[in-house]
Image (cartoon, rainbow over all chains, first blue to last red; front, side, top):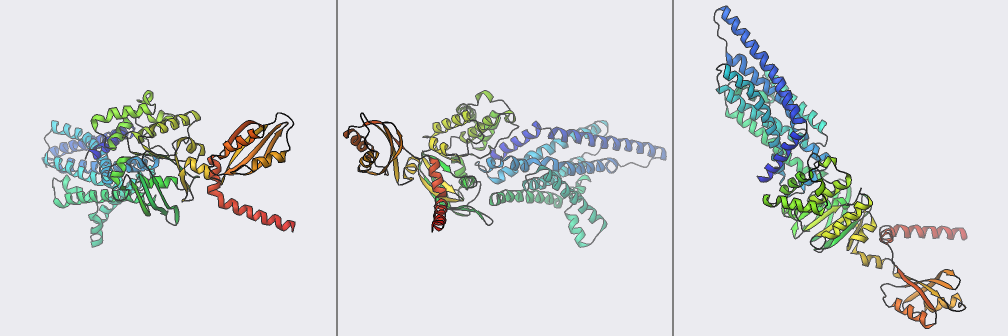
Length: 254
Length: 334
């Protein structure tokens, strides 16, 4: 456990001494801020319109919260590869992996430590989005339960994406390759979602099951289903396990 | 301390290390000598649990590298060929991180880091970023990292590569300083380095073990002979060269004598004696004095490790080459 925290602490520190953490945080704050402002503006316009039309109720949750949570989930899909790209690729390029692998630390401690640091940075991104929602909570009274479940879903989905990125970073010594492959994998998970939407054959549903977005969707609606929780946790463990194996194979091959 | 038996490493069809066996006793400084690509780094990586052996057994302090890697890693300090540095950290921050990785107690962390920085003369750059340091300093940070947790065994892969001559001397001094309390194995392709720093030497070439011995023995056993250079002066008229030559050659233990240089009444002879015959020099001196000649100088010429190395690694090849050229010239004459 100490070893995991040592490695996580060191990784987190290197995120913040390099520009990467600040770039990610500010880009996220900006992009999500714009989406947030536009959505709220849109909602207000609809309120006014519905007032004039004579009182069709506007669903706060459906019109604002769910799309916004979906937005965070999508932005996360794009930013996660940038968080994980350096984790192992950089160590392999600089030869520092030799230090880690010859220190009295177990492989899984290295992997979990690094994933944990990535998860902490991702959490910092989510924290920024919470400021926007805090404004909403102060100014109006949205339902808070879907917000809580949405964040639970975002954390789970983020952990899953980051574990995939961690694995892909361990397969190369080139950060650009790591970020590109992870990005395409994320894109693939988006397309998986699209396939299941347009096709209901068994194979399409099978592929659709892999879609992170499909599993996130219920959370945004305020539903915590054990099958989604189990999916995300299994997904995370699967890729972290493969990362440990990948480190081992590094030993056998290199 | 190190017990290696029939160790091999293959990458696909390529055999980097081929069935080598050696032992290193505690407290020794061992030079691991071989040309580039001989398998030095691969062997060291197997000893540090970075690479698993394809065949054979390697034990450090009784622990097998495959079966109890954590125990091995706790006892080994390793400086890879390129120092494994996080360049975005300060020297002290880096050493503290490595200390934590090596399992040093939090309370001891500061004093251990301090100690390592003092030994490697890093105190004046302790708060500098590693990326700002010169190559020599970086190498020393790498060394500090290796000895931070006071390991029983230090494995140093080309510790002086890329340093300037002054830094090389400092590093060698440091390594000699560390011996005694640590077992050290260092790889190099620079021969004088082994002669100057190491007690024992392990020579490998193309993945195969060529020789293991003490530096002194190896130098001695090079050719079957030792060569002594004597400079003899004469008070009056010098005698015939052949007279002096036969006198020298007839001394017990001497195998032959040849004139190397002659300056007026001074003859310089080279006398070949059988190996490790410590009586040859006193006998030579006595014979010269007995004949009433003047002994101006006498020194034994030992072969440098360079000769040893060339002989041992390329011995067979050069013998073959010689045979071929002899045969060639024979044909021309015939």
